[in-house]
Length: 156
Image (cartoon, rainbow, N blue to C red; front, side, top):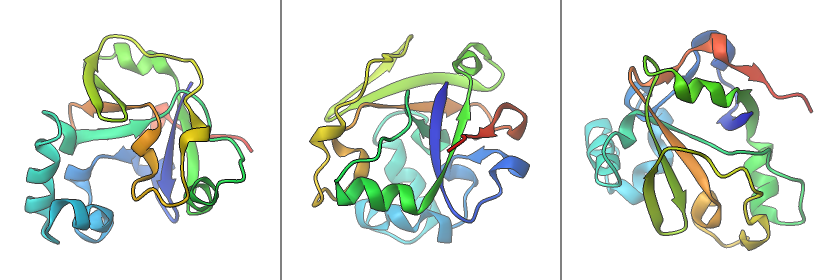
């Protein structure tokens, strides 16, 4: 299974998981500092400098985020719901265009996923970006969203 954490409230089970290209300016506010603008078109342009298709990509992990003593992890989980979907979706070329792995500063196109546990112990309370030190994947989606029929709420 693959796991995505989405801010609450959300409509994931009705509308799917949306990439930045389908979100409102309000929903993109966490990119403002990095993009240097509040405008959606500016944020999308910034995202495309990271890798091609980034504005149509959603992030996912290969395991659920564990409970730890790290404040940054606790805060991240408290503000989001965890949803899951089968990694078989990666084979559906009508939905997933490609997959990028991000591991620290290493960003690369991949054909398979590493299911070993990410280095959760490296997350620091003062990290400005939660995924800064955690290996995760970005699924570039053909239409910018993962349809709800492929998603379920991860059980607690």
